[in-house]
Image (cartoon, rainbow, N blue to C red; front, side):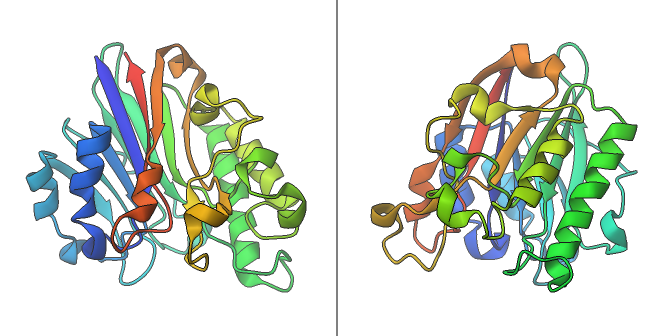
Length: 266
């Protein structure tokens, strides 16, 4: 069995639901994880899932901000006991499992706080929230060791030097500061392997996000790798292939993030 899991910060599912047809055609995923759906659950455009041939849908959303969802060709079992991170009830995680040879695979879909513009927890509440969120996720996965799990999402941190267009210029810019990188690495080290860098060596540039502020994003190519797919060590032997759908940044009314996917041979 091949299981392809795609992840995308769609930046409003109602605005960009038509793009999901392009994603499905190009990546041919079995599971699509979305972030920043920006819609309460009762207004989620559920018809798009059926149109795509994804009859199974789980969602956790709120008005205007955040929001996560999982669309699947395979039956999903919702993880009911996910934490209320930082006590904010702000719809930043949804988890579910799918059946596969060897047992269920748990999929964790995360949207980590962006953290604002000032990399100082005392001067910026949003940055403090981001660091607290990362500390809580690390503590949770230390306590509940993941097994046969895939963690995906917009984690809003580019950890490696080649995950940003200029390591030197972005060291003091939120998303690439040492304190964030250390926090993200500590979370990953609770029991996950960077599945995308499994295929793309760490000395090669790799981005999944380009700012809307760059009018000609492709020419300037000032990107960052903010979107990630991690797998637990027991799934590393199953890693088969990956794709980063860079072309999506040029779609009409694009998200500033592009979809990426990993295929497991289970």
